[in-house]
Length: 431
Image (tube, rainbow, N blue to C red; front, side, top):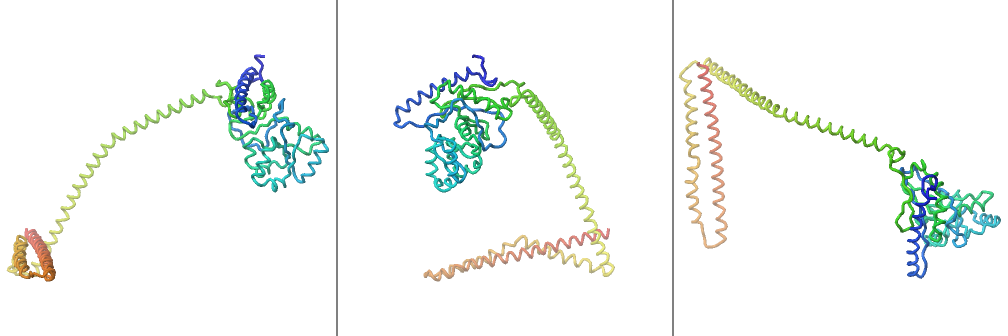
């Protein structure tokens, strides 16, 4: 007995230990709750949690039927509702002819759209019945008509075939089985018992249900990672987990190859870093050389600009000498040559004198004007207000005069420079 396995994988001894401990703990907890509460609540369920390695592709609308030895729903104490196509009366008569008495209520599509359309009516229908069966032809329509509360309460309608000859056997198998609704995650919960069952009955249900559950999971036991037992609000107790050997296929297959690939990638990254560091060092060595070359190039450019600027001035002088030669040819009298030089020098002297004393005459002129302001003073404040803007106008006039003088000085300086350049040109022409 110690070495017995369920489907050649799960130890029965480990399942018994986990189920005994869970059942004892939950029974004590429920007894305390019943003492405090006047109305007993919902009976806790025993769940089998199946964790897979790979997420299953797609989503199944129809649940997988899983047979169990001891049914989870007792039709004598739990009402069962059957949802059918229209007309509803036809299927009620069909149940009566087949002597099926464990179905407590029949509801058609028209009633779901009319009488049970309000939220309160649907909530009352959900509370009144512990299990829902539905014609497999209308299963795609039910999620929209019933709402999400059916799925939150784990009371999804179970599909049955109402066109079979053995209708009673079909409905009995549906009531006496449990169901696996495989979701789009890695963990799926299957109800395998209730707290009113004994631990031995729960173990019998698990022993019969586990092969069917493994057969309906993609890749079977190779894709199952772990199995746990729990109630609605308890901690999950492990009963089986896959080995982590690298030789085993599935999620843990090829760990050594992965480690080798990681080592290779790390080595490649190290090589890339060293090569990049070498390149950076070589770039740093080349940067000062480039800068020195740039400095040399800039100096050569500057010298070239200086050399280029000097020959440009020479033709300017030559042009002035040519003009002097032409003037000689047109004006043969030598007495007229020094005359323009004297005239050019005179304005230069005047410009220098005016440049030395441009500000001297301004204070002399402004002084008497400033003295004239106190003579206009009067005891009345009105007249003083009118007389005050006079010095401002005088200051403006003096500023304008100074600006005009400065402009004249600039003109004279320019004329002197042009005269000097003309003389230099004549001397160069004579030489």
